[in-house]
Amino acid sequence: MANLGYIQVVRHCNHFCGFCSNPTTPYTHDFASMQALVDDLVRRGYFGVILTGGEPTLHPELPRVVGYARDRGLHVRMITNGWRLGDRAFARELAAAGLRLVHVSIYSVRPEIEARLRGVEGTLPRALAALDAAAAAGIEVNVNCVINRLNADHLDENVRYLLREHAAVRHFVWNNLDPSMGRAEVNQAAFVPRLADFELSLHRAMRLLDRSGRSFRVEKVPLCYMTDYAWASTETRKIVKMEERVVHFLDEKQTVRQTEWEHVYAPGCAACSLRPICGGLFDRGDAYDPAELSPVFVPMEAVVAKILSDPSDPSTRWRSLAAWREEFIAAKGEGERVSLSQGEGSSARRAAPTDATVPVGRLTAQGLRLYQAKRRAEAEKAARSGVALERALAPDAAADEGERR
Ligand code: SF4
Image 1 (cartoon, protein in one colour):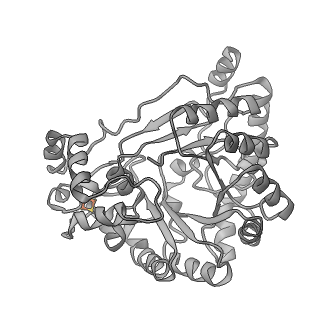
Image 2 (tube, protein in one colour):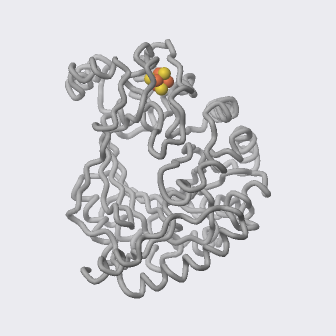
């Protein structure tokens, strides 16, 4: 199966998004600590690694870790805000090291909205330059977009512009905002959209991409808000293909292995034909409302067939729908299918098992000093931009932890 693991290379950033779910921590990586995490993904038999952050291009050892992951046989990808990647020499260096695919985050093609969401002026031209620099270096280019209150009404405008001006982009990923962590948790009122706010523009955006021959994925959006493109839901694809994901968080969570993709459901979900393959409503952070869900009545196995027959997906291994059905039912168990049909939430089952065997990053005295300096600078940015600063890691706990490592 095409499992992908995430390594947070750094947790600081040169942007200041008000809904960042992974803001600055005192933890840092050196090459050896990242090498251990790459080895961990290889040991798990993973297909690839996604280097992320914070902003991963801020780590001086990034090209070296890309090369190491490539040499260990992983498909190497990176998520970036594009600020540094617009430098063509840097893009070429990463390509030569083995970077195969890059996700450049762009929230809005309206410069004033993008700057407001980023907390920094001038971000859009640099992200657009990154698309071109990566493509010119031979790196496959995707666009990532966090759906939020400020861009919810023009997701299709973003796609139309990018298809016209940056034709090298072949794949789009939307993540509905995760309101449970970091700065997003303390700024929910400013940035969390209602599902109905983006339903129409997301539909138009997906239709544009589908007609243009591009591919796309959508995360944390219930299938009743993307029914015509249910096959593009990240959670649904993982449920159907029974995949897992490992994230090496550069914070106190450390390694999280996610094998369950179901969140919460409304009573009406019991009647929904897509219930067995739907991730439901992303509930962590309590910012979304189950009252927004409503059952749909479309053939579920048509969605499954579309996923299983996707020619671009290297992980498809079922030769027929019948073979998939047998394995899916055996994996989930008849008993669970019965409980799923009751429309119950799954908060106990979705608790992510942790794997603490490989330490993620280091807590050092220097890392703590940098963290405290960064927080002071970000407190000023927060005051200027009118967003709240995320909760601090308790300094005493961080110091104690630092002494143990
Ligand atoms: S199971 Fe619930 S959340 Fe999922 S599509 Fe059906 S009604 Fe919507």
